Image (cartoon, rainbow, N blue to C red; front, side):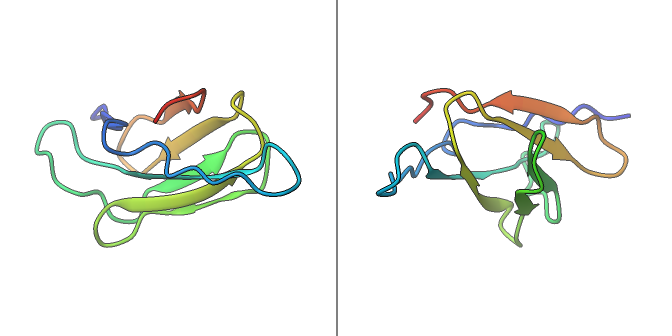
Length: 90
């Protein structure tokens, strides 16, 4: 299985705080490590929740997270699943 480098540089955090506290939107872009091409249709889930989505034609995604402790799980058929802690990345 290929290992995907889920490039989080240029990705994490177009964060907006909501009125009710820690809720924020995390955006990013998923690229193939070997080719630097956009990865379309990658599943992006907040670990332990039903919250998530998939990447678009440009490899971009947007998900709501409730804390800096949230972990995003990236999965795509034929590639190794990756987990990335949101933390305070910008």
